[in-house]
Length: 128
Image (cartoon, rainbow, N blue to C red; front, side, top):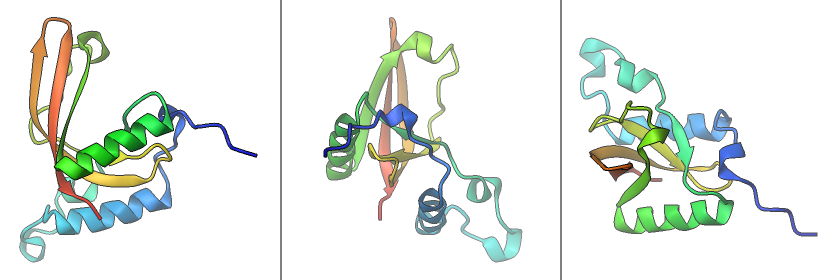
């Protein structure tokens, strides 16, 4: 029997696979260039938020495939979704597929608010 498709917003992002991904991503992204001298930084120690795009697992998976192929991506949402609290350039997050599996560490490269829409552009910093 076929399982119903999961809604990406229902995926719990606090699991072991996410922690393992973060350990690898922070090392490969060189988030702490001088750990011996300064110890761990906040950026290195605190995992960024994880998210999945879309209303279905299939939509999330297709979005992830496109982002990984282009090594960059873009999302748009109504400005009301942000309540005036737009992400800053350089903000990191973990992009997950429709099953909640972490697939890429991404960094916001640009945020543009035009009318009622906010467009976030980002680039892939690390992918396994």
